[in-house]
Image (tube, rainbow, N blue to C red; front, side):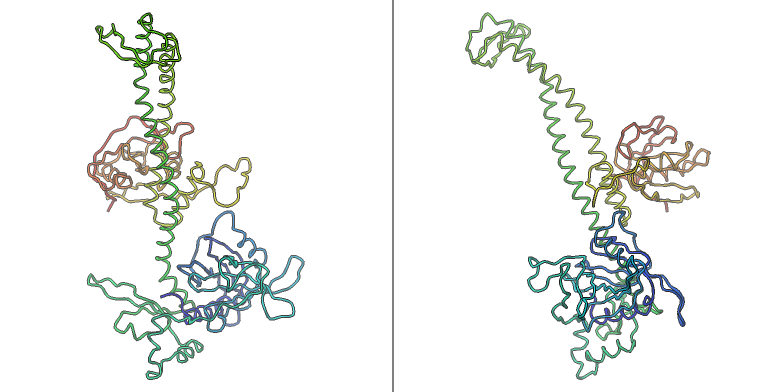
Length: 551
């Protein structure tokens, strides 16, 4: 169920109870259309201190507003809208949170103070209206009750909407009135004149705080339960379903987070993965085409010897060839006098035609050296990007995708987002969080698995000890796997379980009898200038295993 006016009213009331009187400590913009306000509420007469992360999202497919447990901090280079809010609202006191009328609009009023100590007020409005959702920052107009738009997370010009524009400097206008009621609530109140449960009845319940946020579940044949819907009221249309009621001062936010968190994470992972995957696919398609053309060029270069033979044939029979001839039949004494037809350039003398073929031979021979080197480099790039594509398909959360994107930006396969910033000397590249996957084998031994190429390097060359075992699917994109040995030879069972995990975390997951190389970490080296994740190793052995994770 999308946010209807009853849920919006309940969450606004709850946020006012939780956060009013608190001060804004931090502001993040983790996504293009999403904000996090970190509010610290001091202790009061009848309530303890509290810290809350208020999530505001104007995403067209999933507009949200609630107090979240924890959220991503956002990019290192905040967008301009986030910087604007930080300028005016960091340290500001939240006066109140209220819904405007019966609309799906919530207004946050703040008491602010400028750098010179000038007191004032600012307002942040979130409109939770599907594709028209927006977050708008406003200031009061002197001598009037209206608000002036300072900026919005989504600017709406006359080209987008002729009815209502949202641009800096304009007076804030309420959107055209809408129903603000979900189809389920419309069905619930359809016979309100008979049941007494009309819109006015639910309005009174909301005003009096007489509601209990809940999620409705439908029991499944396998004993599980499927989430069906959520609301702050018990609904007759869902009679017979299992209901989980949330309690506590943040009950509405807890309900919304329980409902949206997994869906939001899955949707965000899919969206981010698709964005990176599209860029990867474009790069790979170009590399595949380049590889095909290089192979064709090398096939042609392999016939370079024919040009030299033709030059020799012309030279041996030069006295027989008339100037201006376009094609001649010559005896090839190297082939037992077999007659060969040779094409000539009529504009050239016989000697010049011989030199032309010698030049073609020399050019093809030189080209073959460069084409072979280019083919090796192209294959390395293909292997690297295919490994990134493998990790991308296995990514389970936005942080893993962000790590892969950062890796591609550092290797110049993706253009960095936002403004370019100069890196101070000695600072190096952006540090990514090192958190490889960890598994416990049946014996209790530990293995660690890299989730991207940068993490593979960190795992192998910084985290692992020299006596630990390094494993990787043979000639297949995949993860580096480290089996911790604590200086002792590994048990055979541990070795096979670690190899199965390496096969599982590779492109050959769906295969059987996957070859996995293993050796001690001391024998794994990284060539100078090699791409992330690329290594060379010696003294290795190979196991053939069926991919599986430790149980």
